[in-house]
Structures are given as structure tokens and as C-alpha cells.
Image 1 (tube, rainbow, N blue to C red):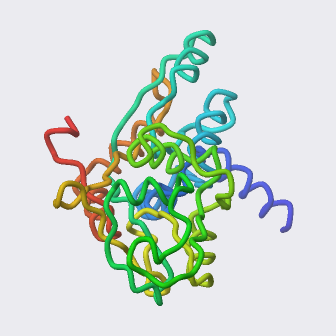
Image 2: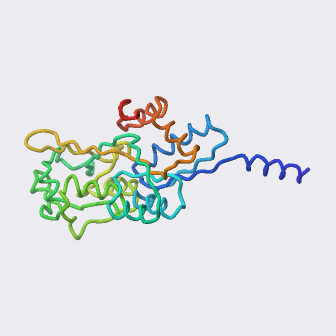
Image 3: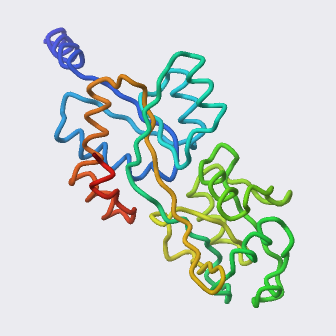
Length: 260
């Protein structure tokens, strides 16, 4: 009887296609939910989703250890060059957009910063909250690790490619940024909107008197020609059902004309 059960399991397993998705922590909650629903409508495909950062996902795609890389930034020049050297053509698909939020401890009385003030904080030029209308306590800066696409995007969009301050505290995941900021009175950090909760407070960012939007595309990278199972997952994420999931989770959906 046991031999029959084992044999049946082997037969069933042989009909499963197992695909791996790896990368951006910002994309991770969305991809996990998409995969959960996708496997319900595609029972023959086993999809596993793990984080680690955009750079980790892209490196895994280069090394052939993942089928799809999640990223909150575009490929770097050297990454594109490496794919070309290996003779691999990469497909890039925008699956949603994310609003990056600046967060502080709930007790912080500051409600807004200009983009320049934000840059000066993360560059280490503003070191006390009293310099921007808050209490006379030190500013504690939390950032993502360098392999994170969020780290790169913030550096590009807010710091205008200038370096972060030397004393910034590097966090391995978005969840640890939330936790650290929620437990530190003078803390400031940045996370994707879907991660924001009532344990932290978000700040309004302005430039020239107008709100300064920090919005970025969220991407999936995979190799061309895509195997049918990979393409099937991407198509599902871009479908009306997939985009509804993104919208319900707090991401900004891709316009239909961009999906074609």
C-alpha cells in the first residue's frame, strides 16, 4: 500500500512545473498573493516566491537559479552587459507602480519636509529634528541595504545620485525598517506604501510648494524566449484579475494600454 502511495505521489509530482520567483522585497507581497491565486487556477504549476532584494533576484536570473526576478529598479548597465555576454535576452515587464513613503516614529511632531530637507537628512547635513521644526533630538537614519532596488531608487530620486550619510543604519528588509522606525523616537526611513501601518507615521514631501511624488515602476525580469509557464504567470499578473489584486493591496495598477 505504501509503495502505491509513493508511486502515485511521484506520478503527480512529475506533472508539476516548479517555477521560482526571487528578488525585490517591495514586490514580494504582491508576487506572493498573485502566485497564491495563480496556482488555484493553474494547478499544474508550483510557484515559489522569495525576497532578498532586487539585486539578489537579478543575480539569480543571471546564474540560472530563478525563473523570474522581481525588481523595484531597472537593470543596471553592467547587468545588461552581463546578460548580453552570456547570450541571454531579457524581457522586462512593468506589473504595477509603488508610492515610496517616508516614515518616522508616531511621536514625531514634524508632518512635512521639503525634498531638499529630506536629502539633507539622508546626507547627514541635518542631524537634529529641531532643525526642521521638531524636537531637539538626534535624527536616526535607516536605509535599505545596497542590494535593494528601493535603496537605489531613493538615491536616484531624492538624493540625486549623491551618497547616503556614512552613519545611516542599513536594514536587510522592509519589515525591519518598519520595526526599527516604530521603536526609535528620532528615526526616519522609507518603505513602499503597502508596508505602511499604524506603528509608524508618514511625512508629506514637497518641492516648490507642491507635493513631491516618489512613484516607481515594479518590474519582472525573465529570459526570452519565455517558457510557457513563466509567460502564463506574467499574463495572469497583467490580467484584470491580477491588477485587481495589486489595487486591493495598495499598489498602483498598470493602465491597460501599457499591458498590450
